[in-house]
Image (cartoon, rainbow, N blue to C red; front, side):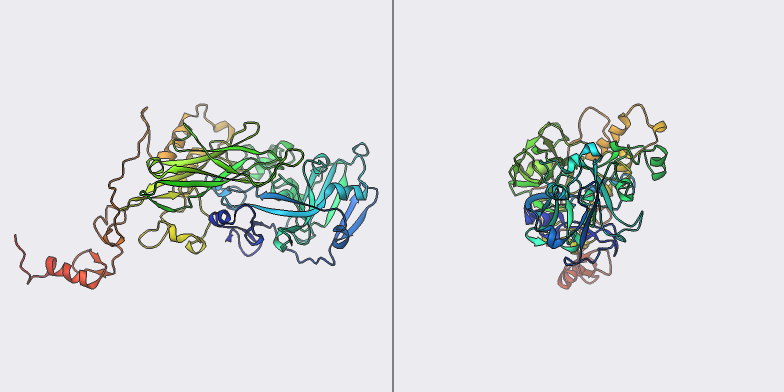
Length: 521
């Protein structure tokens, strides 16, 4: 797992390639983890869920009592609202820490339907004021507010029979792992993970929306010009329902090829692939890949793992693949993926920055580069959260520099200054009326060249179709080291050349530097 924060709280996501390898269901130990504080030490035998407020029979449930109620098992994809946040933070650092594109995982969840639980305790009618259902974790879990992490949800959404909201106590047939909410958590299919309270301790039914600190001051998407907490307070939008995140938005990403993966040009085709998901039970209807900045698109084959429920709703990700000729990949600057849903809503082309860095879902773009001195190409993802190569489980198929390092941290980080200039927020009074200057900056990011005419930039043809052996390679791509075997073990004391063996060095000295050796004019 890639750890994203310090010792506490524990937050992590798996390498995207490993997530891909495990397929539809994510093993609990590879499921992303988002904790806002310490993981509480709770026991199945002593834990209680207190239910109060506008119900006929307020009571406290033990876990043994809870599991005697009817249960359901449903496959559901969970996803962080901060998935792909590092891309946003490279535009301008917001409130949250970096996430890569692997903050999404799928499990079969087993639990007690909330509708059954509310019927058991006798939830009052909306005419009697029972409009909101509030959920809280244990006291002392988090540092802010009253030290509980909570969320307040509209009764209609929680009691909707088309959305199997549950109090989950099992994950892929096993009791929950402590980091995933043991012994019981709220599970709301289609919602972002941050609205599903782990270590569930209290449920209350109220007339007005709850005001838990984390319900109000987390999981919001503010307009782009709101660049600080003080600015949000000034505009009085912390409680604006239009900024609240509940259902996730549509998103897709590429996990094959991997960041820095190398592919030989002698290979005829490459299977590009990734995942996609949507919120509110809406299906992903199609996925497509472009090699020319959206002018034309290649349809992908979608692998679906779940059947729609009786209401036509789906709550899991899909996987997708498309075969692309390797020569076509080599001749493009970058390729990108986008998804569509059943209302023909489409994933946006460009990022829109927001203060919390949440719901980032522009086209996922991967750049393509030639491997110096080889008949091969390598791929550059927008970002990477793995701290070093020890976390790259598939490193044997990666392109590395002569000193064994990755050639890039990700193209958005490599081009961070230009990327920020293209998409950074500005105060309303400073925003230009003509956006063409931003279009020019965005176009530069694709080809890394300034385009001033009507003719699109063309990628130069490969210099050779010959595969160069590792032993024959020289240089490192810089002018300074052209023709030098920079990875040689034997250094010539008379010049800058290096050689792979002492024998080769001796031959070099004999014919180049030895004053006793006769050289013809």
